[in-house]
Length: 240
Figure 1: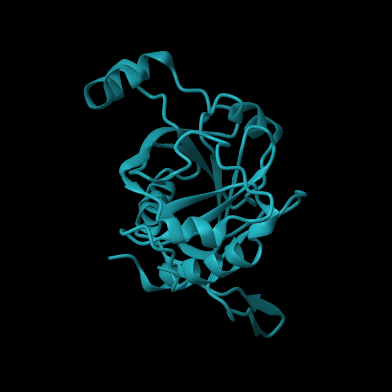
Figure 2: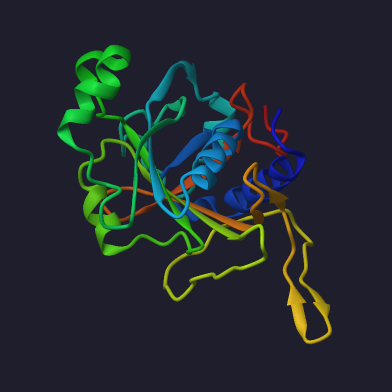
């Protein structure tokens, strides 16, 4: 069962996705339980970033009412592979720093994925990587890596503090920010110190203060993200 704070955050995020649908050329549907799985992996891999691969879930085509509702003025129906399907299960592919996480050793294809995926190996349709304590804005290396993606690339920025309270947050980057957090969460002041809101806690004891999530296509256009339940219905929007 997905944590209530993450469902609340997904609901707020989806409303923003709906309000800004005309700014995007396409959208993808990501089950929120996959996001929770990825968060668990991300904290266990600290301080490294992690790389996750996905394929479209061929058994779950996106509902026509969802398509009609979220197609903005600039919508392109054949922008990327798997565009008509909900995103399937996540696969942890690699971990490392920002310079190495995208580079998957060739031997991993046979050793880790051949039994499960046959000749496709580690060639997934969609990709996501994490930015621990850093905004979800593509770097130049991220943009270069996206040129090899058939689907979309996603970035999950995670703002957190360590169990002992130590924290840092890097946000000196320009780009469109897509916060993923419940509404009406404010910072509290204790004397001269401001206590940031805690959205939730990881299994490793880290305090989660904020999340950001974006998706983009190799051509440079942004892709809208909708966080859905196991039936492919966006959280918080009664459209089907």
